Image 1 (cartoon, rainbow, N blue to C red):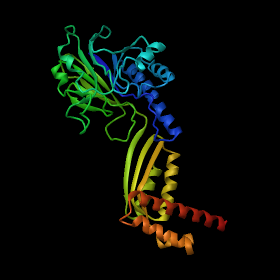
Image 2: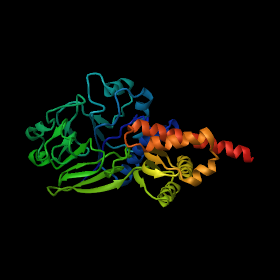
Image 3: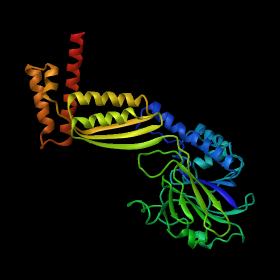
Image 4: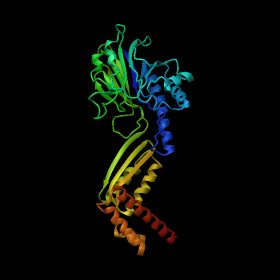
Length: 377
């Protein structure tokens, strides 16, 4: 029996620029930590081989220290690692891979496949057919040569590829880096280890996407996993999905219609934990008191969760009469508030105009609140 750990899309060096610098740094650091965890998992499970199916690095331009740190993170498993370049770290004439070799950072137990030719290992005894990417986008199937590749009789044939299996992924993903849907069967493969899709996904009995081991986006696609693959003779492989990721990425979309909806959103925010990364999209309408409470809850959640992105662009402020009375806005200020309310509700107003009116109303309300608090103090 051959036991393999299949992983891909580590995206080492990813910047997470949509988050503030502290959160971005910790999210980037988690990608090194998950590699350390993969090495521990491989050691605990006593796997024979680790396959990394592309996009080890997020970009060709990662810092030298990032390269050094990545290969040190792999030290917990002393068995063989086999890697191929993906579209983010393609095997160009001058690439992150050639730089890693010049730095002397690649351990002896790590094989980087930069050419489309069989790799025959003795420990374990296996034939690897790699399809490394040599540019970011291709329009031909780099796995086509697998079928005609000669490998020693009796050795398991394992393919490695990075790209889009045609006809099974979301619409619009099939345009570049194509892989035939029947490649495993057509090339007599015992297993085809795939990368590029960031979620775990089975193509057929012998072909799987492992997905990224640490979630890095809000798409709900079963990410944050690696695959333990058991090969035993001619039978289809037995594949176990193992959770490996630390952070839970989730997208929350809410439409506020009644005052109680705000309380529900605030309860959700209060329930977040340190492992949560949240994209909050809120639309609808809200009164000034609810708006104040919502903004406070978002700031508190940012102090708890690893990351909270909030898009309030579709939210319309609808001050109640009690809101207006509480602001003690009379005379000219009261007229401005009335004009802003009309401006954001005007059906003819463009999106930017409505948002500007909403933001101005919120800003003015905040200034009046501060003035009122100062007067009472």
